[in-house]
Image 1: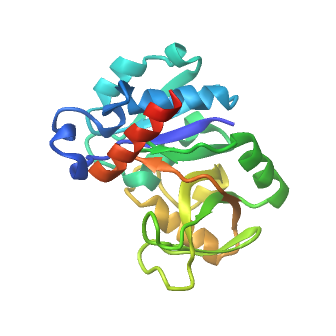
Image 2 (image 1 turned 90 degrees about the vertical axis):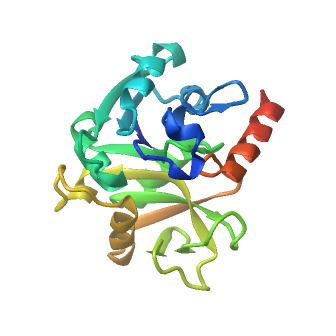
Length: 231
């Protein structure tokens, strides 16, 4: 399936690094972070990527181009003058993505089998699936109540003590999950996940290797160490 990568945010927590470049292009272990993501996707058998861009979008396109440098076909869906939020950006990109697709964040590296995640989604026959990680409050605030194979509740805004899992940063979504959302209306993907979970429409799959992210300076340092070990 195609992969939508959300790479449009302002990345204020990484300033001054992101004062002149988008977060996706921050250098990590000698190359822009986005290239690490795209190269890994290629090893996973992914062939089509849609980059949802906003802040300093032209810089991303100048580096990635049509994706051939990474063995991929890359298209672009730009927010425009108004930032659409994570949900609105995906809604706008739906014509490029088709009936079902992966979604991941432009600041996360996820060492996971995309084929296994896709297989689980097909088995559950739900309009959406979220990869979850048993977090126990370690990497960030746990926000998922998961009972295999379903996400019983995802709640980013009001997490509860019984939530021991966290959104891993990878999901499979069908276009039907966006019914009722207009492609020009800004909204947060977290709100869509919350609504889907309460409606019994959000399946889940547990993954077991931690994620790496560059959303903060601490996360950036950990990602740098990870890539320096594996390269």
